[in-house]
Length: 247
Image 1 (cartoon, rainbow, N blue to C red):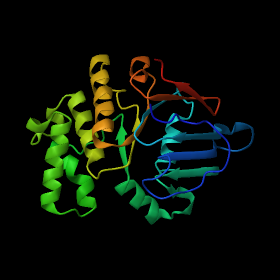
Image 2 (cartoon, rainbow, N blue to C red):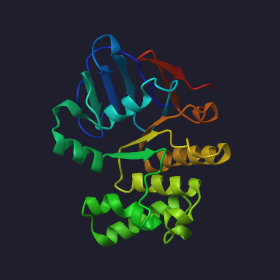
Image 3 (cartoon, rainbow, N blue to C red):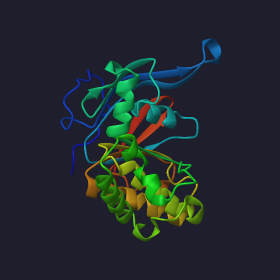
């Protein structure tokens, strides 16, 4: 069994990419608004995620799950606290550094799929590599491999409107993996899918975490899906509670 996630205090020390935990969070705080009307989404959150694990994040609606994912992914900034992703302290990065981190080391999967309707499945998967200006042959080979990995090798030329919801989410997973990210961040990736399709997508996420050697942080409220995670973190009243996976 891999090292468990640690809900802890202490100081987060930035290391080198490829070493130490994939995610290290220290005393993270984020509020919206001011005075009596302020909403305190995160109240001193601290935890670590070891490399190679699929970690589920649960909590009631409005508990701060999306806030936490946006902070870890460099899409938002905390009021205070420290975030270290793959050895990089996000507080030391400017906007260009954050853009590079999101492009090269983090893959995002959203509930709404986020596919471009005028592009084929293959073209959608290739978008991140085009942004990185990858060699065209390398891009084509990687796109074909990723579509095959998610079971859509025969659907490369179809557009999102010609695919089912489950197939669209598989394309989104393939796109998130295109640039070989170290970390996958998924916000309710099965929220628009029926129970059976959602379970299949979550099983796929677990499989690609293993096959691609990535770490995944997935927000979900589905108890059946939580059972597929290596660990579960629960957000409650702005704090993190850790749940070891049941044996």
